Length: 325
Image (cartoon, rainbow, N blue to C red; front, side, top):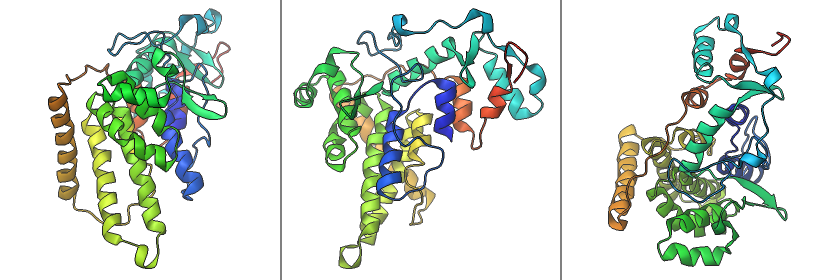
């Protein structure tokens, strides 16, 4: 449900999550509720578009020629009376930080809010995607997106960080085990470069192996291996939060429906510390400077942190031009 709400509020398609959900909900028999069965194609509600190739927080994330102009005559009004409880008050206060909300479908959008979300998402490595010839791929917004994967791989090995993250992303979203395995070292480098969305590449590959291990029977079954994989998965979930990507941590936590083994919290922390330490050492070894990410918008952070469904509270903050909710 959280991803559905994020799609309505933030106008961002978290393709990494959808690929993972789609992979396990169909192939592994995992029941995931309220999640689209296929990633959304490029719309106004897609992930950040890129007009130019930049790597800092000032990157231009939208093609202005393609953005719809909000209808001035139907700018949404705040419905103060709807904030009757603490949750409503909190989310409406966050909504009030933006003064350009307008009706869009059965919800509301704000260009200012969307720009903040897109800046945050692209900085973290949540790239825009599209379907091309029946396959999911990065939407071609950069020269890098026109290179073949083998060419990107050579550029990545030569030290090109943008080629590396594009390669990691394109291999990962193919969704099959072989390509996810091939993506792993490039995902490691992308995470070191600050593209924390690629933690999903690590977590999803672990989840695939966990489900494979669980299906094994007899002599093939290895409970020790399964336990090690589950520990690694839990450690990456916590590492995502330590790296400052609240959304990535939320998504990772839903990739495996249940952890079969029990773990002491201290053991999980020790493994998490080791992962974060490895990332730090890789940065130092390669001379990578820490990137300055735009802050996660408070409204999006509130939605991500909710365990229930804040959509109705969000919509209750508004009334349309006729005064109906």
